[in-house]
Image 1 (tube, rainbow, N blue to C red):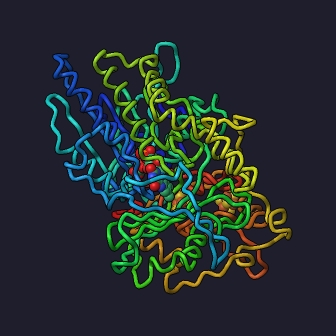
Image 2 (image 1 turned 60 degrees about the vertical axis):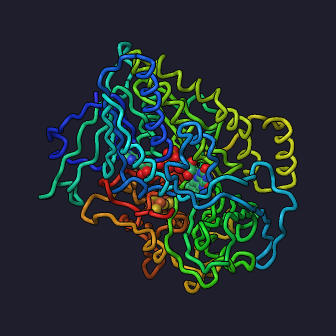
Image 3 (image 1 turned 180 degrees about the vertical axis):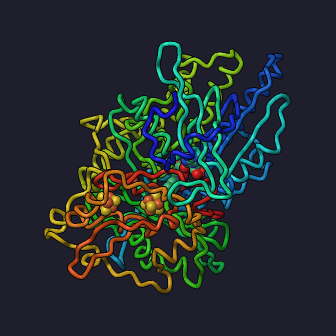
Length: 589
Ligand SMILES: Cc1cc2nc3c(=O)[nH]c(=O)nc-3n(C[C@H](O)[C@H](O)[C@H](O)COP(=O)(O)OP(=O)(O)OC[C@H]3O[C@@H](n4cnc5c(N)ncnc54)[C@H](O)[C@@H]3O)c2cc1C
Ligand code: SF4
Ligand code: SF4
């Protein structure tokens, strides 16, 4: 009963008929992010504990696959970590060599009012309090977590962490009542040419079967889309899943530019009026800086460009001195799920579970999701341990994960911030400020609760409506970015992300409704993908008369941020996983 959902990945008749190796797991994790890694660790805790209590367990095989070449390569975040969940799962994490870049000792919040001015907030809003939290590189933390798991040995439990494997599609079966049940995943074929033909180095993907599959793909997962299509997990959610997009650079700077443990958040300039987003500047030890900007993808502006916003932000007199005399080391971009409580899908379903950003477990007010993703993974692990001990993998048993998570402190935190995005969706207006204050006093309630938000793709306006003139192009409205000094072009930045894909493989970005839609979109909306993509993957090349025929896609530059899949106003792009191993190579992000 395979292929229930639409399979957008590249297929070819020759490859469909290939016999594939079947690998059996008891538990299979998709994605090597913080949600799944801590879940695996916590599952080992639970099983070890059960053994100590004299419970007998059959031999257990646990697998985790990750599309990055190494664990951490595709992991991108801010990041300041609230260690609450980590402390619960691994109380001795500091003694185990947790890679902290320092604890937050001083913080500032700014409203930048113009390209030269700004005001510092006299008090830090409670949701932005970070003192004592760890400043981290999440890609380093994930690599460290994987190595801690690999060092651990629990008798009778076989753990396999397998980077370099993309889960391409879901394998389905029917349960007793005829309902579709997840049976595992198929990994992507390797060594396929642009047309989909096997090359001499062809390696067929495998069928990975499991009793329980945990989907921790991060924001806008390709398989999460298939789950939604088949199981309608979002059908009882108040709001659709919504996102921001963040870009950041890591700089090496002279000592003294930034004090250890310092974090700064700002909003305002250079965001256009009415747009939602904000910046961060975090000290990584004594001589490195993480600097980034998130922009909300529900923007009406067809030319929202997170990369340009970051380049301008770095020139503000409050910000530029942090980077003075320094060198940019790494760049990246990624979507961030911000819907929270009202956008969460059903968390458990026959054969599987959703964790972390894939289930919108982010507190947008705090710009934090790692601790919630971890707690999601831990609640899942506790439920999986019960299933393994009872040898019962039925849906009612799996469903207990949802209850566990919702009743935990993480559920309470998400519930309390449930209206945040709804409140600020039209900008930081006086009414939004009032509502934010009301929400602080009422555990998140505001008049109109639940506040509704729209799908990001549907929010983009035509250039005529937004800029008051038909046919406006990005070059007509863009603030000039100087590609010198502290500013970089997208292509220079992409180089610093270490991104690579084998160019002789099928394009993993699928234009699903056709290029004629792109031509119309260019006329009406200026082809937003050519602007919002932080890696300049999409380009339109008008002829002498200004007409275009198609959108050109340089897929090998793709940093896997998923913005095009979310924000193409015509929903004409579907991101699919390329061959495992391709993509960015984040080591500091
Ligand atoms: C710009 C930005 C700033 C942020 N700042 C902070 C912060 O300061 N503090 C904080 O707490 N949170 C922050 N967050 C949020 C935080 O990073 C996420 O909530 C967290 O990383 C979610 O973890 P996850 O495990 O769900 O997913 P991810 O971290 O996204 O990991 C998912 C993994 O799954 C892999 N994968 C995806 N699909 C497949 C597939 N089909 N096959 C195989 N592997 C696959 C991916 O390659 C990736 O490695 C920020 C996020 C962004 C984008
Ligand atoms: S991919 Fe989407 S945003 Fe880009 S031109 Fe086509 S329709 Fe427009
Ligand atoms: S092509 Fe899409 S997923 Fe890739 S970097 Fe550009 S916007 Fe992000």
